[in-house]
Length: 327
Image (cartoon, rainbow, N blue to C red; front, side, top):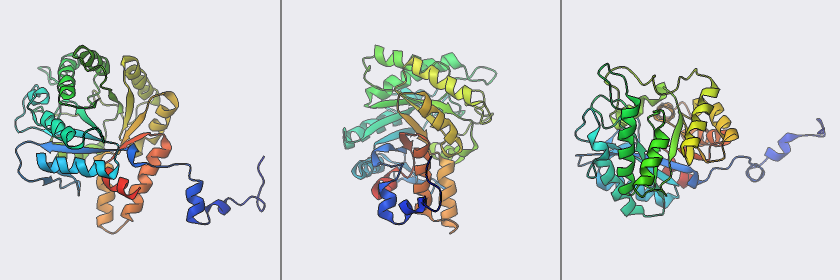
């Protein structure tokens, strides 16, 4: 039994910054952070994303500079998304060796080398003309198994372009196992997989679809992304399946609205747990700060601490470089 007031006074350990820093139970490090970046084909100047102030669709040159800045700040990794000039029903540009994402991967790896982990989002939604994450049936549904064939080819193309990790985000059943087998067969057995194990059909993704130009042209993604009201056990089932298929690390997306899922993953698994602080989380804080309603820097850091405290080892965040410099 601990002592009670007036003998016990918890405020003693909070009375100055040095004491608070010494006893802090949650510590953020720059290497915990992963910066998402968008490479767009055919532009000559970086294009600002209106719904995400401070975020850009990059040219080859500006992408290299942003990656260099992230590495110099001590950021742990970058994850690349590609926006091709031409899209089609099968997302042909996604595994084109000369496609925008593969070119971006080679550029960034050449720029930063091994000083930062360079990874790629492994999906089709940025590359299909319908904005969906896979191959569609005649009725407009996503065909799980035909989509897996495309994911396997995309992952191999990314690994051959220099991606040091692949991150399948489509939430297709069996995606991790198929990608693992394809990478191994192509001689990329050392390339790890960061699995989007719990990715929810969330309204928090809205601004991202502006950045990646991947809004579905019809319907939504509720048939493959998880229901926000779904049981926690469903998320745990998904992560167990991914681990059984060979995932090296796992992810929860979004982050702040799903801290309970992050905590449950951390208690369940013995691999790194990542969380994606998504575009809507970013945009809300930026918008509130622009209106003078909140202290921007404090809200950024507090939100990252909350995600870390819930159990995330890695945090994907659009503030990665800025936060790393502050840390």
